[in-house]
Length: 229
Image 1 (tube, rainbow, N blue to C red):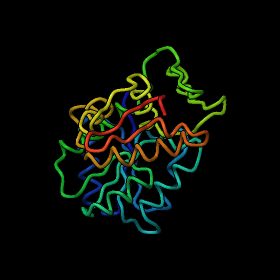
Image 2 (image 1 turned 120 degrees about the vertical axis):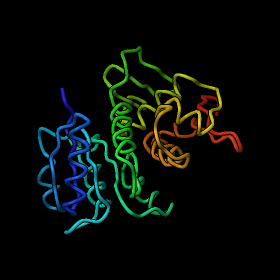
Image 3 (image 1 turned 90 degrees about the vertical axis):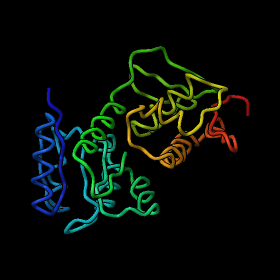
């Protein structure tokens, strides 16, 4: 079954080019040319991914991404920001707003398709496995739920996959590059700094009862998940 991508881009020539490239790659495409139209199109059946331009008439892509992450039915829709802004601070703003990836113009069609497929792969529900528990923090791969001291926790799909990897491999130090390979995949165009952003989000998501302390920064080496506080 073809996946649906909502393409939010105000420049018609770029939108048409992207639509052609993505349709040739086998995706169904919905289009939106401004902030309000995009908002109206994000409804059931929800798109499988949103390709979102930074600057839009009527609002910004960053604000739209933030809005999505605040609502139960849209917060897990993966978002790729598409923009001419290449500065690191802008990239971090986009990722902090909830974007799962960030592509700077100009880019190649092959790179775009590869990144879309990579993001879709990593937000696919984890395969069936037994629940994992550490100090009251429980991850259930089958139901895709995380609880802390029996209280449900909210987190994005990338944070869930990152936590699943950590809890499946405790007491080992992983570099950013190793986390990228194991969580994002070896053929994904993602910068090392992206790992830090998602670590920060994950710590926030599990921090209510102090479980964030189990995700430990190992200076000069990377990160470790440990129940030894």
